[in-house]
Length: 170
Image (cartoon, rainbow, N blue to C red):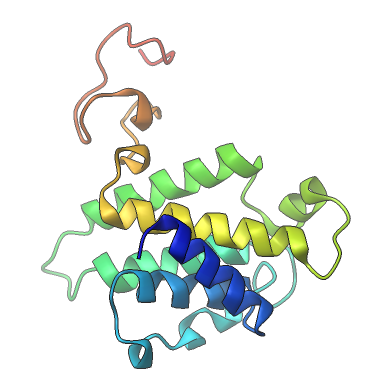
């Protein structure tokens, strides 16, 4: 699947009854080639609506994406490094915050404004799944963030920011 396919699948799952976190998790895992039988949305169920419908926590769509990152790139035990998945997660969080203005559910909902049948959440959920899919596919737009906080401005991931890069880093 490409990004557009993953976004469309996410929206289909959301409209079909899964919530934001569940739809992102399942569509991203499917988009990365996992057998649909292995794509249970259970791991994301508690995260819908900003954690348990409270709207006080992290946006459910972003939570579902982070769960997918962990499922696909997380470590299998304490002997393994989690540097890669941590960098991907932070880059995803920053990209989401840049695109939607924040990461907390209630604030995202306020910025989206009035909705009809969750239409704006459905689109946001699809776009979030697309971001996660790109991050997992190694697209340059989802590079891990550099020490200066401006990962997308630097030529290669995990390289120090050059002085005077124009991002305001020191």
